[in-house]
Amino acid sequence: MKVAVLEAVGSLDNIRIVERPEPKPGPRQVLVRLRAASLNFRDLVVVEGGYGARQKKQNLVILSDGAGEIVELGSEVADWRVGDRVVGCFFPEWQAGPPTERRIATSLGGSVDGVACEYRVFDQDAIVRGPKHLNFVRSATLPCAALTAWAAVIGTGGIGLRSSVLTQGTGGVSLFALQFARAAGAQVIATSSSAPKLEKLRTLGAAHVINYADNPKWGESVLQHVPEGVDLVVEIGGGGTIAQSFRAVRMGGTISIIGVVGGARHDLNLAVLIMKAARLRGISVGNRGQLAAMITAMEQHAIRPVIDRTYPLTELRAALKHLKSQRHVGKVCVEM
Image (cartoon, one colour):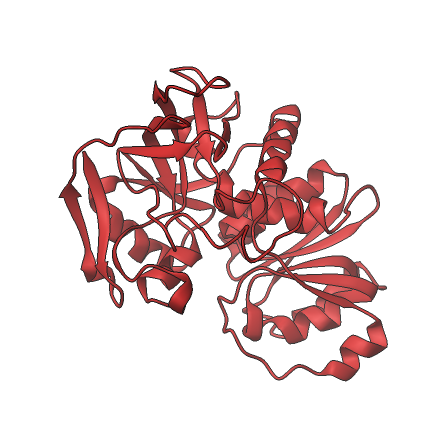
């Protein structure tokens, strides 16, 4: 089978497509024929070795998000059948409850081998049923980006009718956050940097859009639409955008920090945070129970992930370069 391996951290040029034997499942495992995988900004960090001791640094099968079908069962597996369409869990050992060091110690495509391969063995409780209304490519976008957005908007954000949410950009997490917030009945204000991207945000249901390239103080512009400030900011930019997020959030509101695309460090004006009685909350994907609940909700609301472009597995390096360029709208995927 074909496998994409990061031979050593440091460069996309260290990714090789190699041949390996097809694995066999243990008694409580299943063998999945992976049909598609999706890319996340986190994969670029892994390639650079940015997770330090939390990641494998040599001969790592990369990517965390994959979907496929079960082709073989272990001798003690009772709840799955050959042919079941499934999605893998980002954190295989985090079944339910809050995160703990033990529950998130293992992550696909980080501390252990991921899904950039044609076949992979999963523990029977490290997968969930794939959504009935989505194909393999769209299903492969769910374990990290979609679940992170779900955790921010629904799981901890408590967003519902008459709530207001600010999203940033047109990456996978941001578009999922927009879609989940709209499904919950919330008003969404979205930022991006070009007219075509802003129009895409409108078609997905954003009530108001702001061009942050033309308006560096876009936090003030948010208040023109929601004078009291938004209930939730889905923070993607990190150090590059957090100051404007402080301006845009309401008294007692929440800023869920998901990404650091604009930088990992910032000199916080803590006085603003204190005066607004606002909350900063880090979001680290979610557990298996949340993933299953999110898929059920996506089926009920017919939510379809936005796909920017799909590459063959053999062109994974090109796919990652496209992701790094930040020209994408939605998810960048690979097919096996």
